[in-house]
Image 1 (cartoon, rainbow, N blue to C red):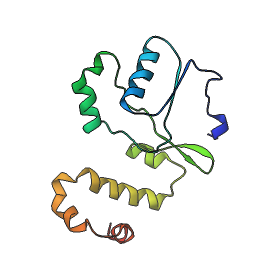
Image 2: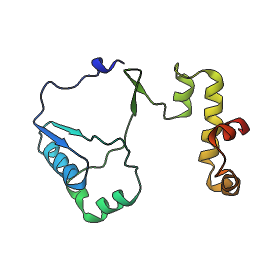
Image 3: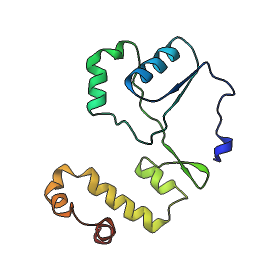
Length: 138
């Protein structure tokens, strides 16, 4: 999908710049009353499903006014196109953007990450190993 093909509305009711708590509450409240909202952030980072920010939002009672939604897909800009980031084993192996050998290496790395707690000693030993060397060991 090309960036120019990504469907965006021609007009919106509210544009919110920033993803701090006040901006998120404003965007959510606007959407809740039926306004169309374009919510932008110039910083490139993710807010994960659990963490300090999420805990603060839940404890604040803001969930009475907004809904938490899970992300159904992740897109990244790559070579001036929006590419879907594979989020499951099945999606990794269906991807035409990753060759077969890299898919196998990626799945080995992800398997190690998923088993982190049961293999924490092994990871502790590898915590200072540069990624290219770690990749060669996998």
